[in-house]
Amino acid sequence: MTAPTPPPAQAPAPYQQQQPMAGGGYTSPIPVRSTHLGHALASEWTKIRTVRSTIWTLGVMFGLVVGIGVLVAFQFDDADFSDAPFTAPAVFGLLLGQICIITLGVLVVSSEYGTGMIRTTFTASPQRWRVLAAKMIVFFGLSYSALFIAIGLVGLVTAGLHSGASSPTGGELMRSLLGASLYVSLLGLLGIAVGSMLRHSAGAITAMLGLVLLPSILGPILGISESLRPIADKLMEYNAPTSIVMLFGLAGDGDQAGNGMKQLALLAVVTVAAVAGSFALLSKRDV
Image 1 (cartoon, rainbow, N blue to C red):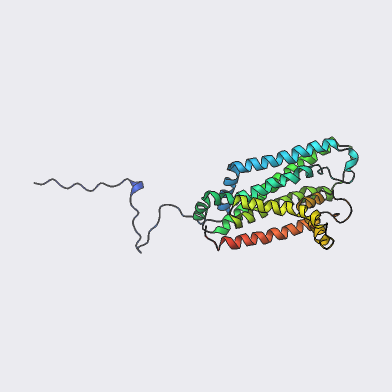
Image 2: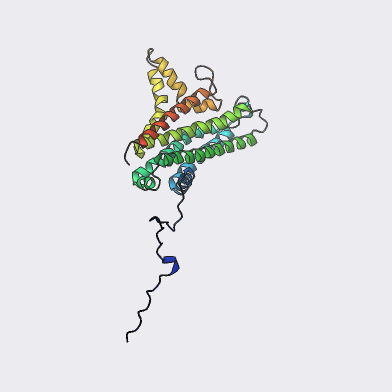
């Protein structure tokens, strides 16, 4: 008499194989959710706040804008603020601090190409436009907030040091605070677009520094020639350092007088064109 065959062992409930549906389909036990731009924003925010380049570049920018601005504020007299806002001392540090924002903008995208991690990013998010858009949104929000706080701190310290001065308020103060922050943030956004197109950190940073510094160098050189003087005047009027100075209301009389709004509008147009080009190339090239 043979012993009865024991029934086959049943796997524990969590490991039991999913039974196919009647129509032959299969329902995964893992919940599947469609991705959207919010997921890309969360990913890029995690990246930008955890890498050391962000801490260093923004830290140096704060040191330059706030440190130099406060030192300059001590050298000013109350009478110096009769036609300049209390944020004016920040312009001296911002002329150097803009390089930090430009560098960070380039590194936001080019560093992933340099290490090859961009392949992992695009594998996780095949819609490439979503990745680049998230990088730009996160960077712009972070850089604008940092610049606004740095310039605002200089304005508060200067107002405390020169409380008896009758500094212009309202439009001029807000133009220097909001306009200068927007101008430098757009330079950083332009750096992201250039970095995405060139895909090389050193090349993109060099191109951006040339775009920012070269017009102010070429202007006086071209001005030597009488026939090239109109071009030289435009280069001197629309270069980045002059534009920032004008936004703070520190430009004197003459050809460079103005409030900097034309320069800000020109930079916005150039940045939009570069961003559009970076999106177009992103979808046509391999990683």
